[in-house]
Length: 283
Image (cartoon, rainbow, N blue to C red; front, side, top):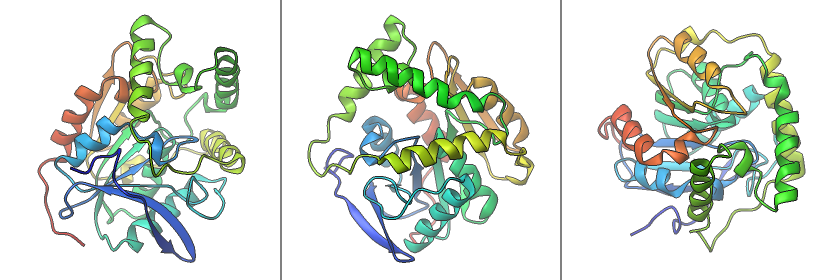
């Protein structure tokens, strides 16, 4: 049986740029498109989340422009990232999708929903907040501090960015990285320096951008975060949920930015309940 650890890599030409992606689950119905986090490539998705959602839905995850094995350069603006995601989805022939965006991916998901409202049926936004959220300007300092700690501890920075430095948090971090290591062949290309810097600029500028009118997003949205998120404070997630006309909010206790991974055993069933049964037809 194909799993996230074994599903093959695919590419598709989108306006002259080769986009890398992977699919999982039985095709048909409204596909669920995953949008990933700052510095992430396909290999950075938690297999338990992808496999869990793919048990009931057709799942698609991709590297956006300039990320991993996808060609081009990462833009410095989230709106352009959203436009690239829309172009990729439409290149695959899909007229309606569900979105699951984590962190930066959650911000890009909002851009997709605002730019192409007829394209998105339902949306999950995890570890993220709205544009114009206060304190986002601190992101380079938070990331820089985590990278310094990671270098000294010889660990991945996400040990410090995604999980609280408690006994429970450290255990969850170790388990998360063990799951990421399950894929051993067909690995993605690592994130480039250009992509890393452009994403950071997009996040920082997004924090200083005028607030979007989230009232325009009429679709159901499931907002999730940890209660001790260092990167995007849970207050931003709460604010976003309050400004969305049709939302549900879940804050996981004693967890950080990666709360949905620490609590994957709860997050996945909640996502499946939110998305509902597989409906529609394949594009």
